[in-house]
Image (tube, rainbow, N blue to C red):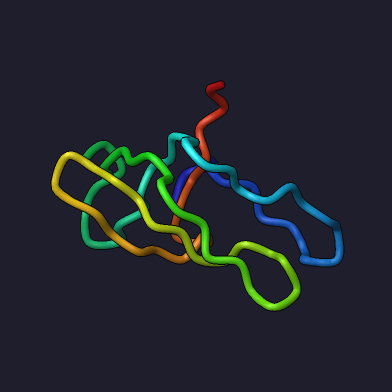
Length: 76
């Protein structure tokens, strides 16, 4: 995997993913240049308030994905 996503230990607090953020869906079965773009349309936080699952809209439909399988793009 390339250096698109920073890996850190979970003891450092990170900001939750937000609605309407643009992300790349990491797909281990595809080359990096063929990963799809998606927009976060729904958040699914856990009991502790940390978002671990989101619903995404892509050009090929709506998907539910784990946040660890996404790469946030630094776009506002």
